[in-house]
Image (cartoon, rainbow, N blue to C red; front, side, top):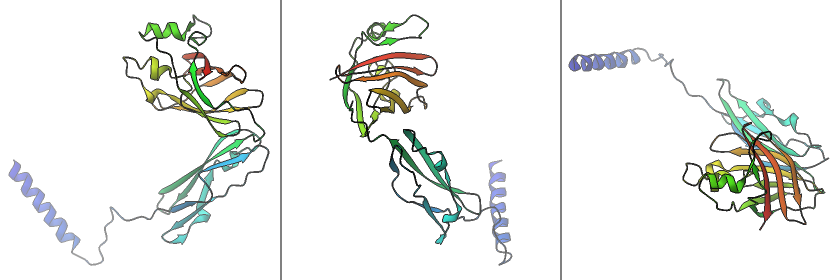
Length: 255
């Protein structure tokens, strides 16, 4: 049986070779080369814009086969940038070649408030007794009691808030290292389950969620409420919801 298969395969390849050489004008119809557009972002990938100012998209140039193709670039999301609202805005530039294949480039615009002088940057530890875990309408327990349930009473430490612009901060884990340092004990959790993100701060100490992402689950927080930075006490606090199932009243003390 194997000999029959091999003979048929050889004959098939021979026929392909004969038919492909039959006519000099024969062309391959099942595959061809296509040129993708080459995109060149104008300006920076990360673009700060002061609150209340105007926003002008620097745009993106494109070439196709060495020819200018810029007129065919679409700037998706550029019209959504609101310079009167603090936040992150993503712009995606798309150029589609005549064969329907796309090339893309992206830019993030951050609208920030330059008048904010309050600064909460620093390293924080979770107040395990003040932090509550559980549904708002159900039984809620402290982080300390919840941690003991998992056989770990270690303090949650080293939550970093890093200032990237006035009133805009990156955080290494908005969960307060719950999954990394508590649930990670004897389980499959760890840094992949840190809720990285960005928050805004105003001069009254109010904290708002701008963006968040947890690698392990591929999504972010539902929301943050009652966010507050108390400069005198050196505390950050907020109520957070994740996946409409995990609710934490988080209180952290600056180291």
